[in-house]
Length: 379
Image 1 (tube, rainbow, N blue to C red):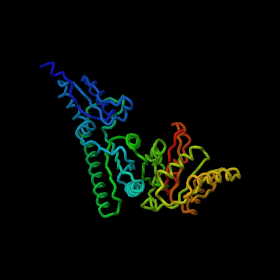
Image 2 (cartoon, rainbow, N blue to C red):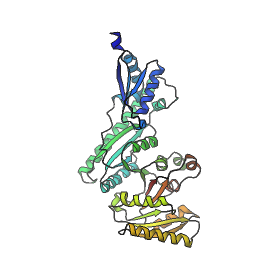
Image 3 (tube, one colour):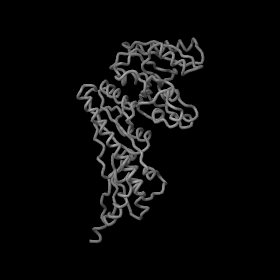
Image 4 (spheres, helix red, strand yellow):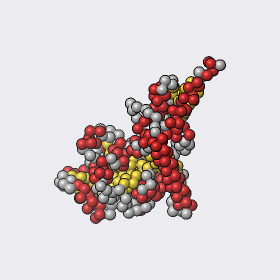
C-alpha cells in the first residue's frame, strides 16, 4: 500500500517554462517533481509537458497550486484552440484600445487577401507574474493579491469574449470577411509573449496598432510594437492610429526603402509574393542618401530594371530622399506621392546596436502616421 502511494501521478500540464517554475516551487517545499513529455529538440516550444509528483505529495502540492493564481489558472483554464499547422496565420495582438481594434479590422482584410487565418492575442499582466521569473523567491500571495490577480484575469476574459462576439456579428453583417479566427489569452510581458507565440505558430505577419507620431515621449521607451519589430522573425505591419484606410485593398501606393543590400532583394521578393501579390499597387523604390549622387541613381535604375524583369506586371519608379532631415523629407515625399504604406527590410541586430543606434524602422514608427511594413531577413 505504501509503495502504491509513491507512484508518480500527473499534477499539471503546462508550457515548458511554467513547468520548470512549478518544479522549482515544489522542490523548494521538499516535494520531488519531474517533467515529462519534453520536446528534446526544441523544449522551449513544447505544446505542453507533464509535471509529475508522488501520489503521497498530492495534497500539499494542490495547496501550493491553489495559493498561486498563475498556476491555478493554468491548471483549470481551457487550453489554447488547436490551430491548423498547414495554414498561414495573421497574428493581431490586441489591448482593446481604438487603434488595436482598427488593426483588427485591417488584419481581417489582410488575412482574406492572403487566404490565411487570424489569431487575436491578448497578453495580461498580474501582480503574481513576478513569481514566475527565475531566481525570484516564491512566497504565498496575500488574499488581496490573489483577489486583484483574479479580477485582472476575469476582466481580460470578458474583454476577449466581448471582442470575439463583436467580430462574429461583423462577419454576419458582412462588415468583415468570413475567415476563421481564434482568440488566445496569455499572461506575461506583451512583447515577450507576442514574439514567443509567433515562433510557436505558422505566423506569416504580425499586425499591430500604434499611437503614431503624437504619442508622448514616455510611451516610446517601452513601446511593444518597436520591440516586436526589432526582434520578430515574421514580418510586422505597424498601423498608426491615423491610418486612413480600413481595408488592405485600399492600399494603392507603396514605398520600398532600399540600401542596395542583397537582403533588400530578398525582402522585396517576400513583399511581392507574400504581401501585395493579390493587390493592385504602384511601388516607389526609395534610397536615403546624404546628398544626391549619380551613382546612386544608376544603382536605383538598375534595381528597377531587375525587378521589372522579375515582376513585369508591377508598376515601378525610383527616387532618392536626402538624409539631412530624414523624417521630415520622407513625410513630405509621402504626402506628395500619396504613399499608403512604407516597406523596408530589417536585418538582425544585436542588443547594443538596438539600444545605441536605433533602426530606421524604430525612428519612423514614432514619427509617421503612415503604416509601415517591416520584412525581416536573415544575415
